[in-house]
Image (tube, rainbow, N blue to C red; front, top):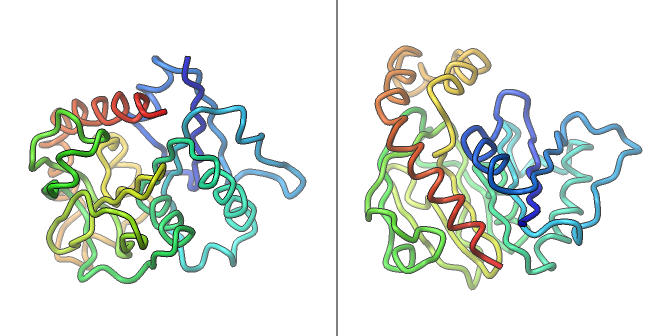
Length: 232
Protein backbone atom coordinates (compact mmCIF):
# COMPACT_ATOMS: atom_id res chain seq x y z
CA UNK A 1 0.00 0.00 0.00
CA UNK A 2 1.16 3.54 -0.75
CA UNK A 3 2.36 5.50 2.26
CA UNK A 4 1.58 9.18 1.83
CA UNK A 5 2.72 12.17 3.87
CA UNK A 6 0.67 15.37 3.82
CA UNK A 7 2.36 18.46 5.24
CA UNK A 8 -0.26 21.00 6.34
CA UNK A 9 1.08 24.54 6.72
CA UNK A 10 -1.89 26.57 7.94
CA UNK A 11 -4.87 25.82 10.24
CA UNK A 12 -7.74 26.83 7.88
CA UNK A 13 -6.12 25.49 4.72
CA UNK A 14 -6.42 21.73 5.00
CA UNK A 15 -6.08 19.40 2.02
CA UNK A 16 -9.81 18.70 2.12
CA UNK A 17 -10.93 16.18 -0.50
CA UNK A 18 -7.37 15.05 -1.17
CA UNK A 19 -6.95 14.10 2.46
CA UNK A 20 -10.32 12.31 2.54
CA UNK A 21 -9.46 10.24 -0.53
CA UNK A 22 -6.02 9.35 0.79
CA UNK A 23 -7.37 8.28 4.18
CA UNK A 24 -9.61 5.77 2.45
CA UNK A 25 -7.10 4.47 -0.07
CA UNK A 26 -3.61 4.72 1.42
CA UNK A 27 -1.68 4.67 4.65
CA UNK A 28 -1.77 8.39 5.37
CA UNK A 29 0.35 10.47 7.74
CA UNK A 30 -0.62 14.09 8.36
CA UNK A 31 1.90 16.49 9.86
CA UNK A 32 0.76 19.97 10.86
CA UNK A 33 4.06 21.74 10.35
CA UNK A 34 2.76 25.00 11.81
CA UNK A 35 2.23 23.20 15.14
CA UNK A 36 5.61 21.46 15.32
CA UNK A 37 7.72 22.24 18.35
CA UNK A 38 11.28 23.47 17.74
CA UNK A 39 12.77 20.15 18.83
CA UNK A 40 10.44 18.05 16.67
CA UNK A 41 11.81 16.55 13.48
CA UNK A 42 10.20 15.38 10.27
CA UNK A 43 10.23 11.59 9.84
CA UNK A 44 12.71 10.06 7.38
CA UNK A 45 11.75 10.49 3.74
CA UNK A 46 12.32 6.76 3.32
CA UNK A 47 9.15 6.03 5.31
CA UNK A 48 6.87 7.33 2.54
CA UNK A 49 6.11 6.70 -1.12
CA UNK A 50 4.38 10.02 -1.94
CA UNK A 51 4.33 13.57 -0.54
CA UNK A 52 1.81 16.42 -0.71
CA UNK A 53 2.82 19.89 0.46
CA UNK A 54 -0.06 22.14 1.47
CA UNK A 55 -0.73 25.88 1.20
CA UNK A 56 -0.21 28.78 3.57
CA UNK A 57 -0.95 32.52 3.27
CA UNK A 58 2.75 33.15 3.98
CA UNK A 59 4.58 34.05 0.77
CA UNK A 60 7.04 31.41 -0.36
CA UNK A 61 9.56 34.23 -0.71
CA UNK A 62 9.27 34.79 3.05
CA UNK A 63 9.34 31.11 4.04
CA UNK A 64 12.82 31.25 5.55
CA UNK A 65 11.69 34.03 7.91
CA UNK A 66 9.43 31.53 9.70
CA UNK A 67 11.04 28.84 11.83
CA UNK A 68 8.60 26.04 10.96
CA UNK A 69 8.95 26.69 7.22
CA UNK A 70 12.73 26.97 7.51
CA UNK A 71 12.74 23.48 9.01
CA UNK A 72 10.32 22.27 6.33
CA UNK A 73 12.46 23.80 3.58
CA UNK A 74 15.35 21.48 4.45
CA UNK A 75 12.95 18.54 4.45
CA UNK A 76 11.61 19.52 1.02
CA UNK A 77 15.17 19.48 -0.30
CA UNK A 78 15.38 15.82 0.76
CA UNK A 79 12.05 15.01 -0.88
CA UNK A 80 13.12 16.60 -4.16
CA UNK A 81 16.36 14.61 -4.38
CA UNK A 82 14.62 11.38 -3.28
CA UNK A 83 12.94 11.06 -6.68
CA UNK A 84 9.65 10.18 -5.01
CA UNK A 85 6.41 11.74 -6.33
CA UNK A 86 5.69 15.08 -4.68
CA UNK A 87 2.74 17.42 -5.26
CA UNK A 88 2.83 21.03 -4.06
CA UNK A 89 -0.49 22.84 -3.71
CA UNK A 90 -0.56 26.65 -3.98
CA UNK A 91 2.25 27.90 -1.70
CA UNK A 92 3.48 24.31 -1.45
CA UNK A 93 4.02 24.38 -5.20
CA UNK A 94 5.63 27.81 -4.93
CA UNK A 95 8.20 26.66 -2.38
CA UNK A 96 9.03 23.65 -4.51
CA UNK A 97 9.40 25.86 -7.59
CA UNK A 98 11.99 27.99 -5.78
CA UNK A 99 13.85 24.89 -4.62
CA UNK A 100 13.97 23.70 -8.23
CA UNK A 101 15.37 27.01 -9.49
CA UNK A 102 12.13 28.81 -10.30
CA UNK A 103 10.73 32.04 -8.91
CA UNK A 104 7.64 33.27 -7.09
CA UNK A 105 6.21 36.64 -8.08
CA UNK A 106 2.94 38.51 -7.87
CA UNK A 107 0.18 37.16 -10.08
CA UNK A 108 -1.17 39.68 -12.62
CA UNK A 109 -4.22 39.77 -10.36
CA UNK A 110 -5.31 38.13 -7.15
CA UNK A 111 -7.53 35.10 -7.87
CA UNK A 112 -10.33 34.25 -5.44
CA UNK A 113 -13.30 32.04 -6.29
CA UNK A 114 -14.05 29.73 -9.21
CA UNK A 115 -12.02 29.89 -12.42
CA UNK A 116 -11.28 27.70 -15.44
CA UNK A 117 -7.86 26.28 -16.29
CA UNK A 118 -6.71 24.77 -19.57
CA UNK A 119 -4.25 21.93 -20.00
CA UNK A 120 -1.33 22.50 -22.35
CA UNK A 121 -0.14 19.87 -24.81
CA UNK A 122 2.32 18.71 -22.14
CA UNK A 123 -0.47 18.72 -19.57
CA UNK A 124 -2.74 16.57 -21.72
CA UNK A 125 0.00 13.94 -21.96
CA UNK A 126 1.13 14.14 -18.32
CA UNK A 127 -0.02 11.17 -16.19
CA UNK A 128 -1.18 13.49 -13.39
CA UNK A 129 -3.99 14.68 -15.66
CA UNK A 130 -4.87 11.36 -17.21
CA UNK A 131 -8.60 11.35 -18.01
CA UNK A 132 -9.03 15.11 -17.43
CA UNK A 133 -10.91 17.32 -19.89
CA UNK A 134 -8.79 19.96 -21.61
CA UNK A 135 -10.60 22.65 -19.58
CA UNK A 136 -11.92 22.24 -16.04
CA UNK A 137 -13.16 24.29 -13.06
CA UNK A 138 -10.95 25.06 -10.08
CA UNK A 139 -11.07 27.14 -6.91
CA UNK A 140 -8.52 29.84 -6.19
CA UNK A 141 -7.38 31.95 -3.26
CA UNK A 142 -3.94 33.41 -3.97
CA UNK A 143 -2.04 36.52 -5.03
CA UNK A 144 1.42 35.05 -5.78
CA UNK A 145 2.31 32.68 -8.59
CA UNK A 146 5.22 30.40 -9.38
CA UNK A 147 7.27 30.15 -12.54
CA UNK A 148 8.06 26.86 -14.25
CA UNK A 149 11.42 25.71 -12.90
CA UNK A 150 14.25 25.52 -15.46
CA UNK A 151 13.96 22.25 -17.36
CA UNK A 152 10.36 21.78 -16.23
CA UNK A 153 7.13 21.78 -18.25
CA UNK A 154 4.09 24.03 -18.12
CA UNK A 155 1.06 21.75 -17.69
CA UNK A 156 -1.88 24.14 -17.30
CA UNK A 157 -2.65 27.79 -17.97
CA UNK A 158 -5.33 30.23 -16.86
CA UNK A 159 -6.45 33.84 -16.88
CA UNK A 160 -5.30 36.14 -15.30
CA UNK A 161 -2.66 33.84 -13.78
CA UNK A 162 -1.03 32.21 -16.80
CA UNK A 163 0.98 29.55 -14.96
CA UNK A 164 -1.36 27.14 -13.19
CA UNK A 165 0.60 23.89 -13.04
CA UNK A 166 4.10 22.62 -13.76
CA UNK A 167 6.15 19.47 -13.57
CA UNK A 168 9.85 18.93 -13.15
CA UNK A 169 11.01 15.34 -12.74
CA UNK A 170 9.27 13.92 -9.64
CA UNK A 171 7.69 17.22 -8.59
CA UNK A 172 4.33 18.66 -9.65
CA UNK A 173 3.04 22.08 -8.63
CA UNK A 174 -0.54 23.38 -8.85
CA UNK A 175 -1.61 26.89 -7.91
CA UNK A 176 -5.28 25.88 -7.97
CA UNK A 177 -7.48 23.92 -5.60
CA UNK A 178 -9.71 20.99 -6.53
CA UNK A 179 -9.79 19.77 -2.94
CA UNK A 180 -11.86 22.64 -1.53
CA UNK A 181 -15.51 21.99 -0.69
CA UNK A 182 -18.12 24.67 0.00
CA UNK A 183 -17.61 23.98 3.72
CA UNK A 184 -13.87 24.55 3.34
CA UNK A 185 -14.54 27.78 1.45
CA UNK A 186 -16.61 29.10 4.36
CA UNK A 187 -13.67 28.48 6.70
CA UNK A 188 -11.30 30.31 4.34
CA UNK A 189 -13.72 33.22 3.98
CA UNK A 190 -13.88 33.51 7.77
CA UNK A 191 -10.07 33.43 8.02
CA UNK A 192 -9.52 36.05 5.29
CA UNK A 193 -12.71 38.15 5.28
CA UNK A 194 -11.33 41.28 3.60
CA UNK A 195 -9.70 39.62 0.59
CA UNK A 196 -12.65 39.05 -1.81
CA UNK A 197 -13.34 42.78 -1.77
CA UNK A 198 -9.86 43.40 -3.23
CA UNK A 199 -11.02 41.93 -6.56
CA UNK A 200 -14.56 43.29 -6.44
CA UNK A 201 -16.26 40.16 -5.13
CA UNK A 202 -18.40 39.62 -2.06
CA UNK A 203 -17.96 36.80 0.39
CA UNK A 204 -21.31 35.39 -0.71
CA UNK A 205 -20.27 35.45 -4.36
CA UNK A 206 -17.07 33.52 -3.67
CA UNK A 207 -18.92 30.91 -1.63
CA UNK A 208 -21.57 30.48 -4.32
CA UNK A 209 -18.90 30.07 -6.99
CA UNK A 210 -17.33 27.26 -4.97
CA UNK A 211 -20.69 25.61 -4.31
CA UNK A 212 -21.64 25.69 -7.99
CA UNK A 213 -18.47 23.81 -9.03
CA UNK A 214 -18.09 21.56 -5.98
CA UNK A 215 -19.38 18.33 -7.53
CA UNK A 216 -17.24 18.65 -10.65
CA UNK A 217 -14.18 19.50 -8.58
CA UNK A 218 -14.77 16.53 -6.26
CA UNK A 219 -14.71 14.11 -9.17
CA UNK A 220 -11.52 15.69 -10.52
CA UNK A 221 -9.88 15.81 -7.07
CA UNK A 222 -10.34 12.05 -6.72
CA UNK A 223 -9.03 11.48 -10.25
CA UNK A 224 -5.98 13.65 -9.54
CA UNK A 225 -5.19 11.66 -6.39
CA UNK A 226 -5.64 8.36 -8.19
CA UNK A 227 -3.30 9.51 -10.95
CA UNK A 228 -0.78 10.85 -8.43
CA UNK A 229 -0.70 7.56 -6.53
CA UNK A 230 -0.02 5.68 -9.75
CA UNK A 231 3.33 7.47 -10.05
CA UNK A 232 6.30 5.62 -8.58
